[in-house]
Image 1 (cartoon, rainbow, N blue to C red):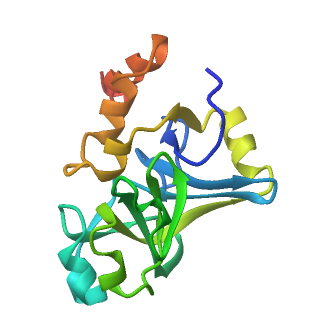
Image 2 (cartoon, helix red, strand yellow; image 1 turned 45 degrees about the vertical axis):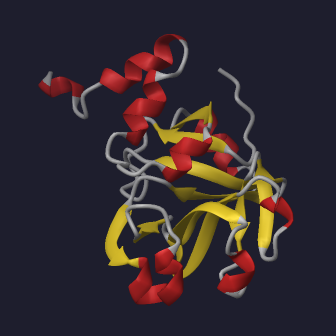
Length: 186
């Protein structure tokens, strides 16, 4: 399996990855360059409503209307991942990444965004890797690298996201969806 590391690619934590920040996670890559990579964890919702932290943005985020723990880096900041409405890719504050998915600048006045974004999810913090670090982690077997779908980013119930993504993969990788957390207890 040789999916390219690029915006829109998903990283699925393998059973070899023991870092508590990433156990059983699904990470959406937002940017990959020679300097490193940046992404957000898709399946770690918090209990904190977006409206309590970012006011009116709470009215437009996807269900559940909570902040997601995007990763261990800069958790006091927020990244907004949005799905542009058809033709909304050039809207104020929107930076396209892949397909119609992009980053939305939360400093943009909301009235300029209304009608240009179909779906929105906000993440506190992000996951980051330095130059060559992610490639090394993939090579050592810490991550499965698979293509992402728009629905993966905005799924309502994220508890089974990792298993669902694994199940749709070809070959032996799909079998990882049925692997117990501790094979010795099987």
